[in-house]
Image (cartoon, rainbow over all chains, first blue to last red):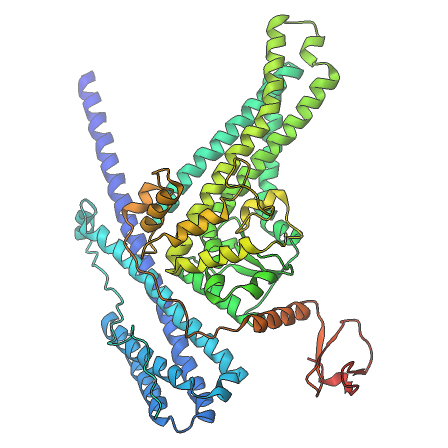
Length: 191
Length: 401
């Protein structure tokens, strides 16, 4: 009699502990998933900020360097493509943003040839905003990728993978910017 | 990072508990020693501690800012600083950007305050804005952000409050005991047993503040290393913080409005004396030269593990400084190149920009004379026009900005 009750209590305690443990794993997964979502939203905010800054930049540069039409058009075009890629999934968007980064860095390299433009207060303020936005994009990408890595690890590792499988948690996608030559120094040629 | 916070919280709790125990023992012994009532002493100690903590929790941040004479700025007052703070908020993944403050002081320093990431503030001196380039500023701000992210501010506030209570209790305790000749002995009870208790109470009253201070300093130094490690990780550029620290250690200007109690909140010890010897037991900050050496020995990485390796190499202790639980999920991360293509105002430009801001924040008007002179107009200037001291042109005040 006494032994049966004790056994029952032990079983009940073990069951309760397991349930609490499962809850904790589930909540941890949800927390990580929300964090990746938040981090992604932050990237979106910064990308949008960059899209908004570019027309201003193009206008300002045009005033001083009108015959750099090709470079300017490339930037505008890349911006429009990137804007169109918003909401089309991480991979597509990352590709379009990579192209835009490339076009922008070419523009900023060209600007080096125009001392008047470089002394323009308006341009300097824009350049600070733009380069800070670039930093913010890469920092939010950094934080997003860290979050995705943690989330994916949790989903794939024992024992949390069991809970993840039960409730259908799906691994996140990394935001990789792969532009050929993004890491290379911009080429400046004097003709 | 989450793991790091959690392990930090456990360590923090242990520390607060250790200091708290010291406080309780002291209160009890003092109560017993001179009022024959240990519980009363305990309760008095707890009440003082509770109210001081309550005040520090809700008012500590604004008090520190007020005492240091910091002024809040907006995004347009100093775009570069604002942007750097925003960048580091994103890199650290903080839920909300801290308020940004500037202290008008030529010394090079910065501090973070606030009880949690939602009520945080970062303050930098105007001297820092003038001397640091963008990467260095980013390094300093990242260091402060780590203090916010790791909840160091709350921890250090609680510790310093407990330390303060211990000091107050010990001070009054020893005075009362010395000048009343000891409550217990006077009542003629006890005999030698009472004398021993009295002696223990006195010794404890003398030792407790010293002991508490040592615990406090030890924790503070450890926090600085951790903040350096996270700072390097956030910026992916350890050299920024290293070269900022180098500039800070080269500067001999002492902070005007620093207060001993706030010292752990600053980037570098504000009371550092010229040529002061390396790390000793009573310093809130590790020696700057060692911090620089660690940051520079992080061979090709910016991860917590790289910092940990560099730390154990430089300190020759063979032990790391980053909690093991934080290293488990750590990934090797590369170092980014220096920001060369960014707008980098030269030093003279930065000085001008900062002094403009300080004038503006003191409500001085600005009249640009045609000869290129900038005339600063005090806020209480009532005249309609002002004469340029340089070229003699009379400028109308309507052009004031």
